[in-house]
Image (tube, rainbow, N blue to C red; front, side, top):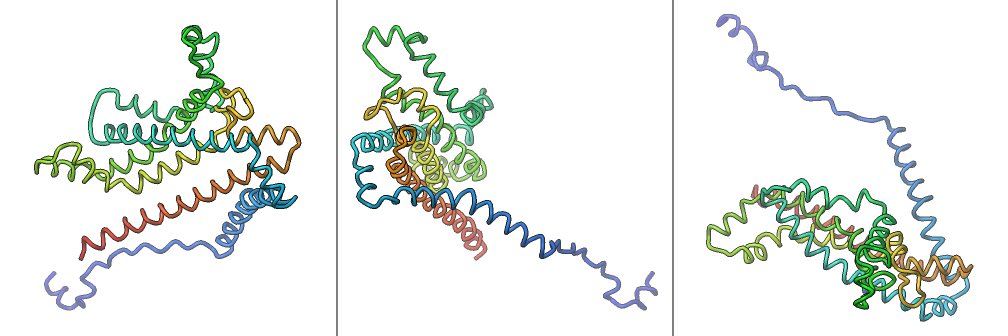
Length: 300
């Protein structure tokens, strides 16, 4: 073996490392997939969005401004913003508490809590609205008691808010749970060992680590809250000027063949969606930047 090794070149004695061959797709396949994706985005996203704004301004700015300044439209806008302003903070508090408990602690019923968080994803919004009708309707479980105490939940703002909270329930929690589980407990445990209280640990350690994921979940929750139709339609009663949100107002105007006003209100919803999309893209960019810059700082 020694004589043989002395006669062979040193390079021959070293086992060559296996380098997997790069997987390359044909150029025609790449181009086809890109064209298909662009065609779908153009036909099913850009064209409908352009139609909404085109129809909204078809009869000029004066008709558009008149439709937006209509008392019923203004009431729908106010109700939509107010509902989102209540539902989003409620889900924010629950999402942070639930994700912190699930990611940082082990307890009985943890899997059940995860299942309940995902429940609104699997239940139709119309069904969720009917649940509140069965609970708080005139013939529901609490209907008689509510009538005796002159408390109105259905066909009023409380019912709309509760239905919106239900359908937007998972968004914040589902963004934070995997993020917190990935980060682990080391930093929090170190802060507690150094004498920090649990509340101070949350504000100075946990919250800075989840801030972009938290903001991302809040944006998604807000977008769903403003655009919810099914659950709100069941519990609202469609009272013009009182319980109609922007999506419901669009439906009523469209059914009345008032297309200019319907598309005007719809354009506001589309504009809010575009703003939400821009914020969502910014948050994704910041998350990507933070995750790529942090390892570089550690190596330096």
